[in-house]
Amino acid sequence: MLLDRAGKFVTQLNGYKAFIPKPLPPDPPLRYDEKLQFLLSEADRALARLEGVATVLSNRDLFVAIFAKKEALLSSQIEGIQASLEGILLLEANITPGENKAETKKVLKYIEAMNFGIQRIRENDFTLSSSFIKEIHKILIKRVRGSFSIPGEFRISQTWIGPPGASIKRAIFIHPPKYLLEELMSDLEKFILTEDKIPPLIKIALIHAQFETIHPFLEGNGRIGRLLITLYLFWKGILSRPLLYLSLYLKKNKDKYNDLLMRIRFKGDWERWLKFFLQGAIEASEEALSSAKEIIELKEDLIERLLAKKIGGIFAIKFMDILFEKPLISIPDIANNLRANLQTAINLVDKFQDFGILREITGKQRFRKYLFVDYIDIIARGTEI
Image (cartoon, rainbow, N blue to C red; front, side, top):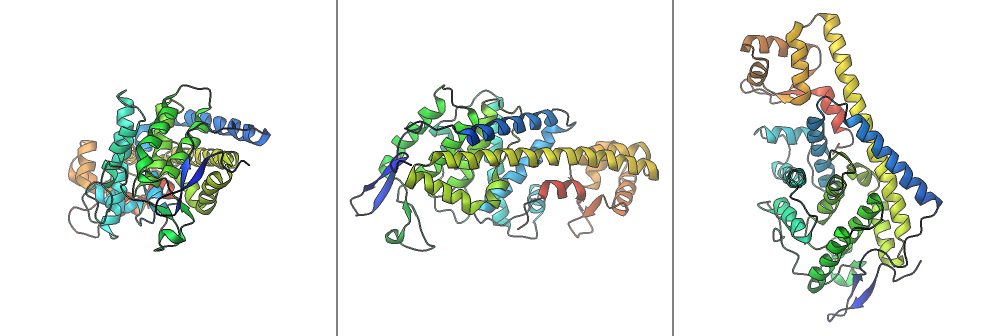
């Protein structure tokens, strides 16, 4: 490896050496050996399979929405934020979860930032630029308790990686100095917007690693860097819906992920990072594909069981459809969606609870909410605290 292929360490006025990354693409150019080409081909095929299943889901936009919540949760957990999918659903329903509310709110801010980006893409009002990244950061950080970053602004102090609480003198890696951030992010923006022949999965892998090395904000860099992966691929039309999320893979392989980013910085080894990233794209696609298939099978199985037990008649089948759209629901919501009276909704809920489909999660006598247990269990897999 060429030690300065990704950049170089430059001594600053205070005596420490900060890393200054070179503009992308890597120079000398990437080496597409047999394994890298194979993984790229497999990742493209995995994405194509995921796209195929996503098109046959009857409620695919709702599946995308709940899967996005999972990604927001996992990406936040990587940063040490402790929350659960059930807690997110409760807080969205204005019910205080039985966990740290402030932590759960941080996940909701991530969901808000993600939805903002997705909506901008759908409205053809999107460019993956430095200004957009600042907008995302502002949404992510604004009005978050305990935040020490200026929302939507690049950092104004030096950052580094080292033992917890250690000074910069004990740093194992020092990010670029603050006075270079605008220039470095401008270079990254040019690379993002340049039309070239670099495969999209390779390009976003390069973008993600470079963004994490620049580390333009005091906090939120990891979450934003992972969000950029999803938004870039959706923006480029690689998937018709934002369904590829790598946070579960990165959560499982956190140490290797950090080591490979360091290997880029110290040894210029972009290729090993790219292979890791592509393997992640394959596994994330397969995980999303498996979840989608399980949901399709769950719906078919539950309808068959309801019909076999003669539970609820036509209202029960309609209610089943509603649950796949609203996995957390109240009796008034059920009555309204079914255009039925409250007693019919109550009867259905009682039967669905007895059947093990629903679980009451507020513990209250009034304003109760019921969770579609099996559906949430499929989505929540891997998010355990």
